[in-house]
Length: 184
Image (cartoon, rainbow, N blue to C red; front, side, top):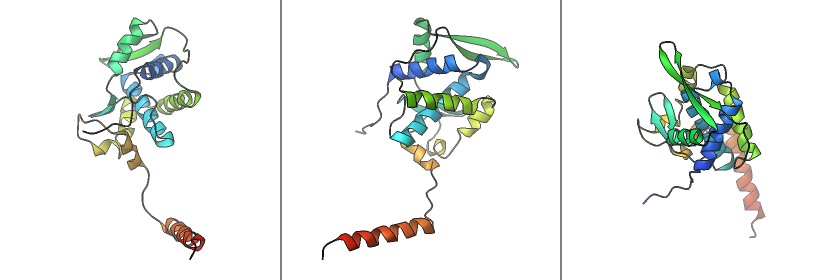
């Protein structure tokens, strides 16, 4: 049996979506961007503090990672009257956009988490859904097969792991200091 140290928090996912719907201009928050903002935010939070914001599972899909419970969270937010999903014609297709019906009121997200979500929203602003999707096709995404869950630890694949001369010098200094501090 495999244990999962990451706990999914449905209410935090809903609140993150609500924050993004309130923060982003309607034309800047389609389905692809919403999935990717959540993905980038959760992965960067995991990298920074060892815990994602929402803990939602992300699955590898053709156009990048997708949040497993996002549709359910959106339905719940719509029933609560906080967010509305709008389908609009867009270049011969229909694009989903998300609109906050109420001003965002923080409840479960701390200031760091809110800031990171806004920062990721600003990061994708001005980019096309295709560009954002391509950005999510990174070393972490490459670790899984289509349809598989991307474990949070895969974000570590984004950190360069080559050992250079500075790393070797640090290790040698640290070893010498440790050896010198030990009683004979």
